[in-house]
Length: 240
Ligand code: ADE
Image (cartoon, rainbow, N blue to C red; front, side, top):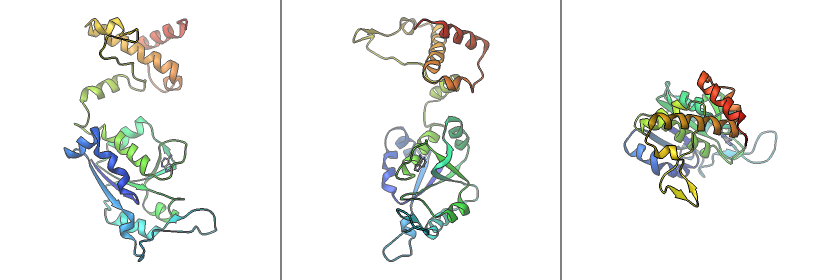
């Protein structure tokens, strides 16, 4: 999967050299190409922004330099995404949808934003990572690259994804590892039983329980089996 990132701060993307995403890059499963928008400035001081027409605080990134940076990597098959708090809010199904593309171009604004004309000219879609405003689109682009890369074959174990699809739309069940007792808290007996059928059932119930108590809104948007519905009723009737 190819990510081209248009940014004024390519150094911020060093974090993608770490851990799972770092390994995916090393193996060539994903490629993150950083394009420094400033390199395309024709100004002798490498200026890329100017004051807003109509007045107001801050600086606005100029359209030409952004367009020239884009043109250097333009590919008609690529989708151009502008990271913006005005965009569609990112969720797991959006991540999965975007992961089906082979090539994404991520445009990161900084300061007060980017001249609207170049956004209108090149952007296919705006994506937000939540209803809050950050200083720029770089952190959101990193979030997007990380979340999409998990869907690229070979980046994470297929088992992890299977469990995810098993739990489709639900929050994850709690996990435990050694030691068996920590601060007087015991690992649930069932996980030590070796009975995989019962463990799967227990985990499904825990997923439903966690989702019901932490994010009941998620339950409204998923299709539950009759068995799940019955388990959910049991959970609702439990005395806290
Ligand atoms: N740029 C600034 N804030 C943002 C957000 N919440 N999501 C995406 N891009 C942004």
